[in-house]
Length: 168
Image (cartoon, rainbow, N blue to C red):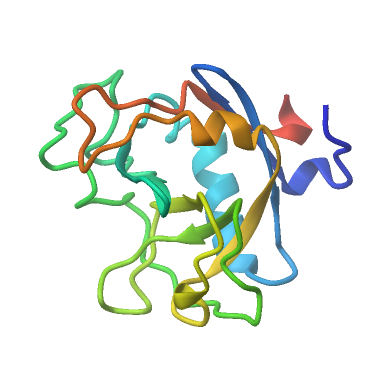
C-alpha cells in the first residue's frame, strides 16, 4: 500500500481490478478537493461509470446525475450531468497534466466544473492551464490502465466504491 501522508486528502477508489489511491492537492485546488470529498462522503461516486475512455488520452467519470450503474444508468446521457451542487470556479495552476493526474472535466466555460473528473493515461500537456489539476494517482495506476475503452464503452467499468482514506 502506498504511504498515505494526509488521510483527509487521500481518496481510495475501488475498481473491478483493485484499488486506486489518489492524493488530493488541497493546497493547489481547495474548492475542487473539497467538492470531491463532499461527494465521496455522500456516496455519490459509488457505482458511477467511466463514460468516456480514450486510448492514449484519459478516462472520464463522475457524472453522478446520469452515470450510476447501480441506480439506473442512462449511458446515452452519461457525461452530460453533474451534481446538485453549484459549479466550481477554475483553479488553474502551473501543475502539468502528467500521467496519473486528476483533472476537473468541464464544458467550454472554464468555470463549469462540478462532479466529473478525468485521469490522464499519459502526459497531456496540451491541457495545461485549461483544466484544473487537483490530484494524482499514487498507487494502482495499472487498474486505471485496465479501464475498458469507449465513448461510451459498450459495457463500461465503474467506480465500485470511493472513500476518503480518513474514513476508511
